[in-house]
Amino acid sequence: MAAITVQGLTKRFGDVLAVDRLDLAIDGGTVAGFLGPNGAGKTTTLRMLLGLVAPDAGTATIGGRPYRELPDPVRRVGAVLEAGGFHPGRSARDHLRVMATAAGLAPGRVEEVLEQTGLAGAARRRVGGFSLGMRQRLGLAAALLGDPEVLVLDEPANGLDPEGVHWLRGLVRGLADQGRTVLVSSHLLAEVAQTVDQVVIIDKGRLVTQSTLAALTAGADRTVRVRTPEPEALRDLLVARGATVTVDGPDRLIVGGVTTEQVGQAAAAGGVVLHEMRFERSNLEDVFLELTGGKGDPR
Amino acid sequence: MTRLVHAELLKLWTTRTARVLLALAAAGTAALTVVVLTFAGRPGQPALGDDALRQLVLAPNGPLTLAALVLGILGMAGEFRHGTATPTFLITPVRGRVVAAKLVAAVVAGLAIALVAAAVVLAIALPWLPAKGVHATVADPGLGARVAGLAAAVALSAVLGTGLGALLRNQFAAVIVGLLWWQGSIEQLLVGTLGRPGLERWLPDGAALALTAPGDGTLPMWAGGLVFAAYGLILALLGGRLVVRRDLT
Image (cartoon, rainbow over all chains, first blue to last red; front, side):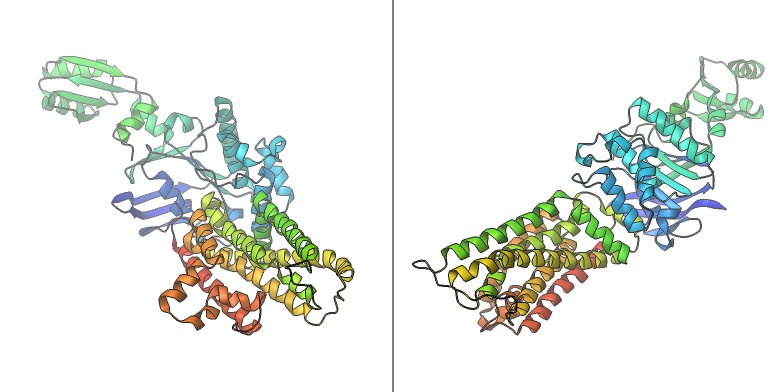
């Protein structure tokens, strides 16, 4: 059974349709990247999943139940959300003590998660003096308090230096190896590419694609861009040879799943003139931009 | 529920503001008591009577209720100010329980402030009053009721602050409204506009007076306490509904 299920999830803020009939399913025990440009609706989706924002329509469940109906949510789900959530005057240890007390967790867990996130040395310092990276670590410490089987991390790499990002990857991988489910959002595909098993990409509140990382990159590595005065004829020739073809303007085609040699052979066999042909070794980021419309469209 | 109340008290205790407010309340009470005792009976100042201890215990009620009011506001609105509402409601998704725990914690904190202050007054005044020629004893039959009135007024002010914080959620706005209420502007305006002089004893400030300055024109102490508590609880109910329903973005 899927650990996280979202069905028809919809949320409107005034004129903005933040999340639009979103469906997705994350299998238990996997690390899933939740990707999309800024403003795509990732944070709103995660906040609905966590019962902080009420959806206008649809459902979001964890282990088959809405978050608000989980009997002991902190032991089931840990979450790191953007924008802090710390009182600047409280020390890191006190922040965690308050949470552990409210959740009825053993006080010893506080020291364990401080150790686990590398904050033991800073535990007595007031959070107001923390760097963004340290706040992210404290957020992770709080998420780990209840030793949950599901983790929801919203842009956890924000504000981390390269060393911190490396550490985060190791932490997430370690959590996954223990059989936990991790849903980690990011606006940068490369940031999570080394860590995730599957990716969910959304844009403008809608699902763009959900697949394994391998499937996403397999189609991406071999793309040939062709310029020809006879695009329809060439398209038919290429489709007959099993390529995927997208028309990209009056005289342009984007051909997937073939090499330049195969395109050239098809054109020669059909007597089609080519004006230009270019092999593109697009990386993950290009795939991502292409899938999400590319412009970023900040909202 | 106990663990939620415990967590709320820990929240208050682990911020500097709360500790500073408690320290200020104790120090301010001590200073006020010393000033009254020093100047009592001098030219132009009324001499102390046998009810001196009772009056001294109630003397600091103004600053103490204000401290409790602000503490209540910060406890609730501070969650939104600093975004701690997110972790708080992740731990306890049934938000009404958090609001209830905050109200109980406000009562506990208010009682603590009032009892610390009363202890400070007694510690200073009991050894000092005989030197002023006043017979003072903790066995004074009226003293218990005065301490209880002070404790109720301070605790219920914290409840009112919690309700105000929930209703407005903006810490700054809630403190401003709280201040206006506390120094009486809102009620004067109401009474003045409505032209009903008997009204004020039914308003929050007038009801609180029944606890801290019982006398002619106020409600009986128990009734004043009930009315004052009702205002706090109504604010908390209205505000609590908003807190429960509002999206946390």
